[in-house]
Length: 228
Image 1 (spheres, rainbow, N blue to C red):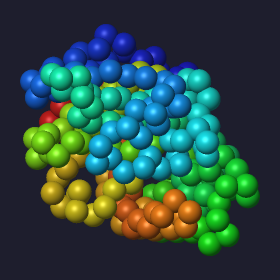
Image 2: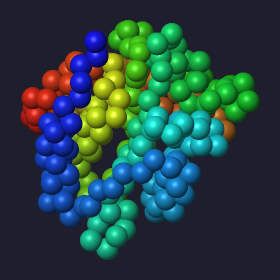
Image 3: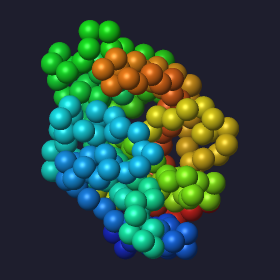
């Protein structure tokens, strides 16, 4: 029997991070329409193009399978963004999903360039299966950087994802320096998460895998272990 989500505890968990954002002068909101999300991010100065993983023209997200969070400042100008989506990897694993390019394109045979490549050598990636949540497209405006905003956003995304899906795993992909500088809340880090080249997107990455198992996520939220 699947354990029930304690929504009251999730509310307390989210309230902590929402209040932390408010203290920084940021008002958070959540959305589910990724056409709207791309429209907002496209008009956001200094933010790079959203990866195809969150773009409906390349990887549509069914209702209930994704969301995004945007924070605005006192002038109602976008100060941060992040997005998350759910994958059903019950018959696959994360490494296979990345290397097949299905993580980035709904139909790689149609949208991927012949020279597009993704290599995933992180050992844990082949053990990440079931209901798997990816969170990414993180952007924080320059004047809000260096204030711990990514940790606040990580808490928000963990809480929302747990409430919506109670996933088996939650993961992200980020450069090594993010681990070295302690940018995000504590999680498991492994090199070789995604060595990626998407030709037409002009994307070249060599990211580490950041992940938490579902029982760890549940423990953080239910225990309100905000120090982790």
